[in-house]
Image (cartoon, rainbow, N blue to C red; front, top):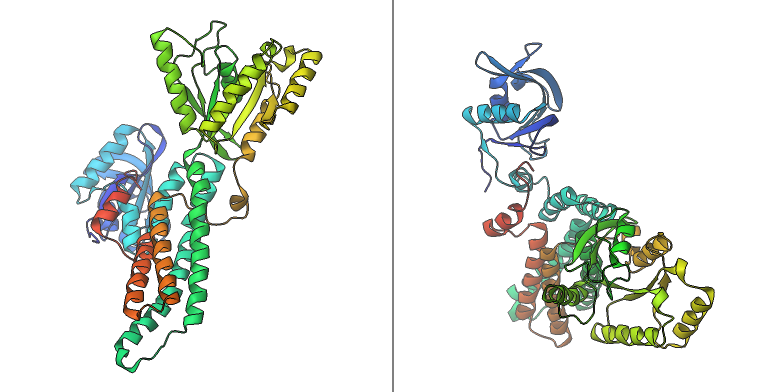
Length: 470
């Protein structure tokens, strides 16, 4: 699959800026760059050492396009493992396009999405999981997702998988050897040691599979639905959490008729807050559509903030009615954390506050209750800390491997299934040839993760999601 073409692309975001970087990679990259570069010291780029910088001008015949700084990286000591040149030019979109068009005329072609990283993989500079981590690193927008991407890019996940695969491969070789001496009825593989290895592999696979639950929400953000009756302060709470006027706030009930979403990073973890339409009986067709969406968002959310107006709780039976509604929601979604948020704390009298606490204490729902004033931003930090407590960041703090990629997760599940089959085969004295088949399939799934097993379709699907210049 390694293509010898020299490819070119803009490596910095498109649009005007202070500088832009144009990247070239391929066997003839340095020669092509040299043909359009005029050094201020008359240097020939083809004779310069790797990892050096050179000041000069990009010229098109007699026409000077820009003063630039050229970086040279010779194979195999470059990102792609090929000769690579990076041209740092001024960030005018006109200059960028003029230089790229000139390089295309000189023999380059435009790079496909992710083709630089694809070449790095094909040339052995990265394995497949590390290459995918490059895309995750580029798209990371909070500390946690950045930390996970860096850990995978450094090879933490790959090393765990490679070690398991190597140990399993050693035993697989012995099992395969037994098949060659089937008539002699000999065993080269120590079954006791093999079973211990399978237990160890099973333990690691289960840990990696379990980590996907936290990895997936860290990568995509944790959805939090803000729900409750109309005019209890849901939009005000969203604005207080985001510290900006994101949602329209009005004393008119039913102002929010659709869901409003925005993101916030708390303690390095991304949260997606969803302000929903107030839940109530209504004959308004548009508002009823918004309420329907509210229930859809509750189903999709990882955490639900059930917001109530604390000043209304003193009305006879109001708190009891709300607790019944919350109970129904909890029964419908038993695994979903629901926080009972009492708003307008600053307006609740001490007597009413005491009565509310007494009622909640005698209630057997064991609700996590937080008092806030969304308008005055009282209790908002406490709410943020409570939200953070729902995220198990232990693995993240301990720098353990966390799986975030759905493709990896799928292969790990299939590998675990095959390891379970191998264990069952050993326990039931299954013939070596049948055990060998399951071992091969487990090895295949491990290989899919790191790229030791790959095909054009798989690579095409992965790298199609990269940006052009990476």
